[in-house]
Amino acid sequence: MTAPILRSMLSVPGNQQRFIDKALNVPADILCFDLEDSVAWDDKPAARDTVAAALPRFEARGRLLCVRINGLDTGLAEHDLAAIVGPSLDVVNLPKVVDAGTIRQVDHYLTLLERTRGLEPGGIRLIPWIETAAAVVHAYEICAASPRILGVTFGADDYATDSGVVRTPEAAELNYPRAVTSNAAAAAGVVPIDTPTTEFRDLAKFERDLTAARHLGYRGKFCIHPTQVEIANRVFAPSDDELAWARRIIDAYEAGKAEGRGAIALDGEMIDDPLVDRAHQLLDWTRRVAARDAQLGR
Image (tube, rainbow, N blue to C red; front, side):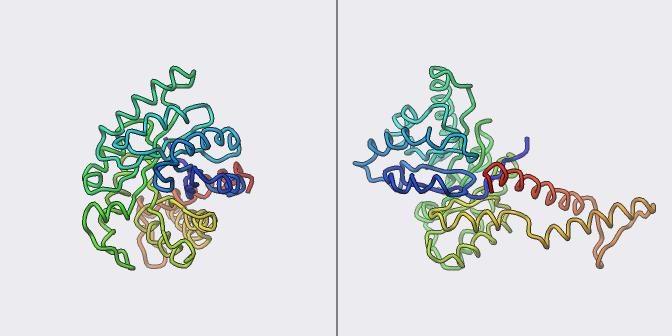
């Protein structure tokens, strides 16, 4: 199955009606209404009701609709799911996942809700967070725990708190867990989504973070402000230079094969099958991005 285009995943506080209203016009690939970190404890029941009422308003607008629920350890997760599961919900964003057992618990509860509410079992997908040292150790089994898994999000701040690493501006200390998460997602065939950039006004830093994440194999970004969305959509799509490179590689390879050459080179570089496959992947990625943008009316 081809992984979906999830370049931008915009978090929207579930207790802020004005932010929910503004999100109607933001071209994010996935809107994630938050019931967890951005909502104070006493506000969570009201936020749950607000999000449940908002979901039908966003249905059929092209983007996926997601809710980040509270963790299983809070005692709130089942109440969150009972309130939000319905035909408008596409994805549940699951925080504080430790291992595959967490996924199986939520999968089971979702199946019960889907059956009792006349929904297709398995239709609601999951995007878990990998944000603890234990979750990094179990990253692949989390990504492969259920057919519901659509993608996985790395959470740097919670990971740093849990593991004891010291955050630095260069973020070199995050290279290992970011790479492990991305690799696990690739192995499981799901979309790796990078950690939020909390300095939301520093768009230059945001773009640097996007570029670094893309180099590590990420295909999307968890955005915390609408101004970040367009930049994420642009960076997580092949550039004009990449497309030109891909076409030259494919043209040179096909010309060489037509001439019966066993060894084919371009600009001093040998062209082998993995390089050609990469070029085809870039062209396919471009086509799927264009289709996604058309779906969003962009």
